[in-house]
Length: 183
Length: 315
Figure 1 (cartoon, chains in turn blue, green):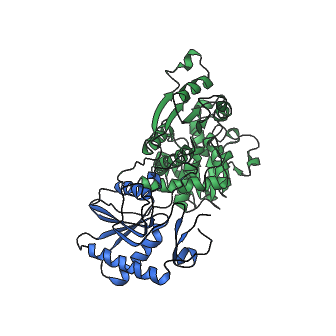
Figure 2 (tube, rainbow over the protein chains, first blue to last red):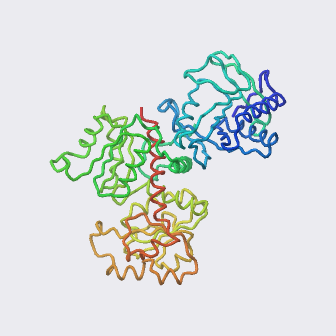
Figure 3 (spheres, rainbow over the protein chains, first blue to last red):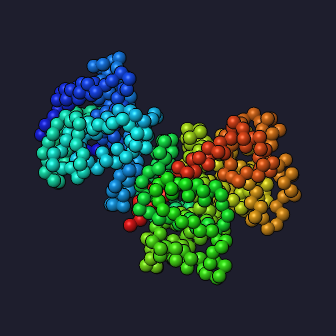
């Protein structure tokens, strides 16, 4: 997705691994035997984080159940009819979310609009008991909606026009997070 | 970011391979949406769509209507009977009047080939109509693109892929818009296409489209991975093309005896409406090798995909 080299990453592979392990343990505190958590990776960029969380959970608590799905919120977005056509990506969620405890997972929380769309998408699968939000990086002072993360790895201040970039080994060849200045 | 290369869907002829791939992948996502407890998404909630059916239809009209509702669009229905057409209004005037009521998209069925193209050429001249997107839902004996797309999607779902598959169209090729759209689409998707019909129901020079022609259904059955049976378009027959339905069923119909004797049993498709006992025996239409009702189900998702991809481009 991004071919430029990282400019001073503030997190490398080790930092990301430790932070994801910590987030996974925080999720474990929410776990209840009678109502296992549902981890929902938001397309496109939340999926890598959700996969890593799932792997960390398995390593830490191999016997504890964690349900997993991939959710694409495209059809519920509020920015149709702008410059580009919004093309959906795969949703992979083959069970009902009625009365389930759902954790939405995304890489960067910026305006909050994707999360708003994702919550609407979740509701078409049933009425969950609750929804919580986990992100790797939260951008402070950037929200356009009253949405805040329940769990985050890092909280950063970035100026308007800057981008928070997250790279994953499986897609980009390395793990790294950095703030990119707008060209 | 990908998007369709054309503003309208007038025929398969105008679609590129990338367009087809985009429609197929978007359809797969809408199939997923249709499995959910709530099958409705808000994507086109700010759009209004007019379904203009100047010719009879059950499946296609209901399928489009349902697709529009599932996308949260507002819709109005128009059918030729009971309209001002009988008072002498032209097609262009009728359409311009509808579009002046702030309608964004038109789903058009008409008995004259090229009606969609005609509107696409002339609407831009009118201030109230230039923005409109047109979807051809069948124009005479010319094209019926969404039917072909849903047939191809159904084959892809059942056989894994269309590319390299041997697909036969059997029946009234001469009068069928489904046949032409299917031939064009399946060829673009890399299938090997064959038509099977009595010579009197085939257009001249059809083999110029790069397809095989057969006059024996038994041979065609042996050589096909899927067969699409087309009904005799009685309403378009102006002269006698074959002695009678009994004769047709015996020679070109998929009857029980022929099916039981066939060594190779391809997937059975039919775009509907089915004339039981003519092009296919009712038992086979309802049997395990038939995906006729799957096609109908996929039709809603295909139409959602097309409406979704074109609807977003209306400003």
